[in-house]
Image (cartoon, rainbow, N blue to C red; front, side, top):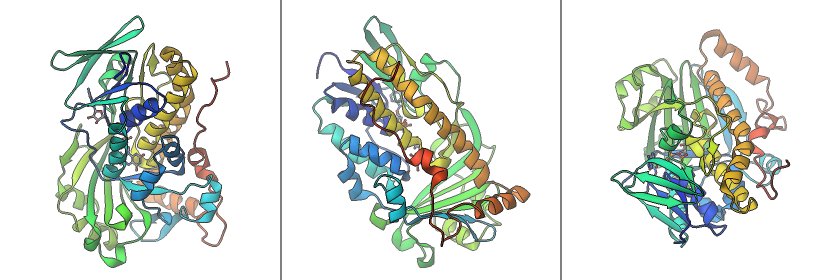
Length: 405
Ligand SMILES: Cc1cc2nc3c(=O)[nH]c(=O)nc-3n(C[C@H](O)[C@H](O)[C@H](O)COP(=O)(O)OP(=O)(O)OC[C@H]3O[C@@H](n4cnc5c(N)ncnc54)[C@H](O)[C@@H]3O)c2cc1C
């Protein structure tokens, strides 16, 4: 390991992607993860065509393709009537042609994480340290000193805070308090294919939109598994992550919805619960040789299914600018933040708005269905234009030159 590594706090998808992106450019990286081992919790993750470009930049395309599933459609159904509200054909030639040869994908988080982890482990410039909690940092001239729980200290040329929603690095860098508790709760579970009733299995990402609820399902791992995410409004919880939920509350929230929804929910014995939080977008998240990445920088509600996608984009952009800045990290981190803040803020803001659309009740629900029925994609015979999602799925270009002054 070189004497001058970049330090990364947090070994989630964002932290590992940043380590890999920098190591591929020749930098030594030390990653510090508080968990007893490097692993990812949760179930499925959706992959927009924008993130497939990033997999290419990270040399991961083939490994990811071994595990991901390409759904035929994104479908929104009304959970009270069962009617299709909108159907976006993301698995066909029209989508692929529109988005530079990339399709939409879904993958088990564990599989995505394993691909990243194995690639990092195989890299001699990356050092992975589990059971190492980062507490604070100090900038000393051209060095950053990271204070670890238990009294240890490590030194590097720069620090990336990829330590997620409750980031310690952010708390010190921005001192902007706790994340915003949205009042939305997600329950997640995975079913083996054999347990999914035949008439309910489909190769689509389906979202059943109900009043103050929604249920999403899609196949995972070459179709061997079925991912379920049920979301509802509840003010019972302030904080909570990866804890066992209360199925009675879950079933009560969906009681008036279509039998297909209730039949799927009844199949699950064990649900893990997440209290969903985000933050107001920030304009700046870099100072000197310290920056933030992924959920630490721009935590968002999951309604656009883009949090991990954005973390992967961050990692690729950050590493590209670090190299272009001649490894002047203070300059590179400013370029990176300036390149990223508007796009990620747009995803943060739009995700909240999508949540309102999914959970619409009463007349607002009727307006939603009426409005979306007149959108491109609603008519199965019309050629889809995909313009509504182009700003997101067109993705980003990997920087090849410093930003214009
Ligand atoms: C219900 C739900 C569904 C979602 N679906 C999608 C989807 O379909 N597509 C998508 O792109 N995104 C999705 N997301 C969002 C996605 O999960 C996150 O945006 C993504 O995991 C963020 O990655 P990260 O590495 O920035 O943070 P995290 O995954 O939170 O990783 C942070 C890591 O840092 C570690 N850590 C924290 N504090 C410290 C410390 N002090 N010292 C050392 N280590 C520390 C943690 O243990 C963790 O390993 C979803 C989220 C939810 C809740």
